[in-house]
Image (cartoon, rainbow, N blue to C red; front, side):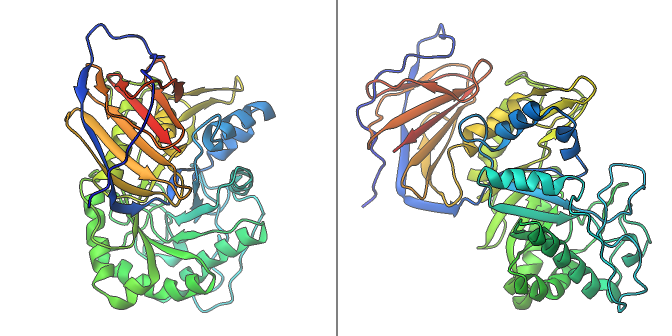
Length: 449
């Protein structure tokens, strides 16, 4: 028999947000405990290309405030995944570089490696240690390119491909990066060897076809597994495009053996269906396009908080993503990052994009399982999750222009609700009775237990 989540004895909600002139219409929301979907690994941000240095340039109190906004479950988003950039370029090269642990050719692919390590890695070690103090345990290190001398174009930038004779040396190089972090007390849990292998960029980039990627994981897989690191592939620049990489790996039993997490981005195409694998899948990079700094929740720009909230919802419910990693956590100027830092004035500003993520990530914890959720009103995007501790989280994104009332809520134990919109950032709502009004153009989070 189908079991439905019964929410009991909640009071009529005194709305914290501005009252709406229109009367709320009724809606039926059905939560199905028996329907089980993907396991959640977490939510996170990327700190590649030296963005951490922007935070370190601020006074210590401002540094702490930003770290709280990212990682605290009481003050911020409670993020649980940190994506690090593995450098491929020598120090001193113009552009936002990620310095390599082997910037110069050691004398060929068979020569003894000449690794160098400064214990800092463009401040990424500092950030990883800070994240760990908040309880973060998932550290995803990803390479945009191999060093130029390993590639057919001789450059870490502008695409190019990995030379066959350098495959083993590149695999060893990547695992050595993880070992250096372990030396600093940080366990790299997940390791990727390519970022957008189907896109040639003027910055660090490297091409792999799906078949080439499947071949290389058979080289890297044994080395990564011996180091107790999950192998991740392949961070295509679009979710639909990622399916070809997943299919190539799934079609090769030896390649499939090694890949533990399949990844894709959302630039060329967003998640509208799952990747073709029963392994966990991550939406590992996306941020809205645009050329202005936008702090708004809902202004129709495509850069606002509502846009990010819908993107997270769709990745979870349509793409069955187990993790959602945003690009970027912080940057400067007219950025679409969560936070914009002004290093001249030693200040920062926060966009509602951060709070759109926080409404999910603070409450849906690693180890949660998505369960069934449907709504009678098509304007409501609803998802539900059961955490490992037994608590349940219901996310209701009202994309409509009028309020709606869910009047059949009954509860198991303690219930809490929060609203995120133009005037509120994961603000508690006092629950009374057995009904709740869902504000228009807002994200309402209900936590049971």
